[in-house]
Image: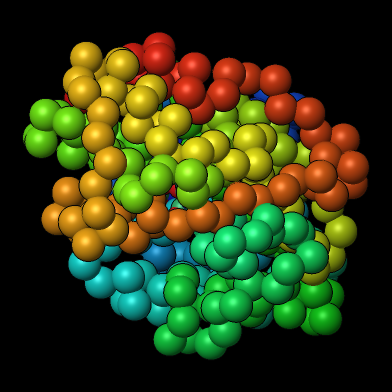
Length: 298
Ligand SMILES: NC(=O)c1ccc[n+]([C@@H]2O[C@H](COP(=O)([O-])OP(=O)(O)OC[C@H]3O[C@@H](n4cnc5c(N)ncnc54)[C@H](OP(=O)(O)O)[C@@H]3O)[C@@H](O)[C@H]2O)c1
């Protein structure tokens, strides 16, 4: 297939593009700068000039493709509402182009915080509805495109997609907070759980979903259902040679910044249905092993 990707230069997107190319697909990637275009070219991806704010560039990219994988996102944590509005506008543009074609539209979403305190499954509807909700309510919007003849698929990534080289997301931020304070912290009793997936397994699953997921379906890109955050803090402390401590929930914002409210969540997620439906079996190292490997040592 000729795939148009956004975010192909990013942490998950670069591994996903490599997996797609490995499986014989051709990948064209949105590039908002010469630097990104050069990185894409070096990876065997054809750059397509444009940006998430340039809807015409997205429309032409999608129109020339057999399917779209949308992994680009503005990670501006100071204005997530604006990032959400952009994401919604991007998805609306893709939906208009792909309507009636049965072509796939895979979009990134998250598995965290959807059903706090109990295991989230693929059958749980995302509570974010409408433009003013988390990520602009993009997941439900895109899934509704299945009624318009689009093979839309929501990729709910675990809140940490880890791997060699270390991402710049949640675990990196937690490790930086540990270095700053001289203590690796968890919140309260640290029994609250976080799902995780290795980037290599995630990329493989996106490829499987592109090839085989059904219209309007939800895919849980989750290898480990829930790791106690105390275990995460202990692994970070051990990797950094720092003591481990519990902090009060009220201190989480000051200690961890924007990650604090996520690190406090108990948000396990299952991928049982995903594995059954797509035959996915994650094989890469787990989160604690990757932390122990030193990938998150700032
Ligand atoms: N990583 C995780 O642990 C995780 C967990 C849950 C969900 N997710 C979601 O999965 C998706 C991919 O995440 P990621 O970690 O791979 O993200 P990332 O490494 O931050 O990459 C973001 C991508 O978006 C592109 N981008 C950002 N702003 C853009 C703009 N204005 N125009 C065009 N492209 C733009 C970047 O391009 P440049 O190269 O030009 O900067 C980059 O390719 C995101 O939707 C993210 O929220 C990630």
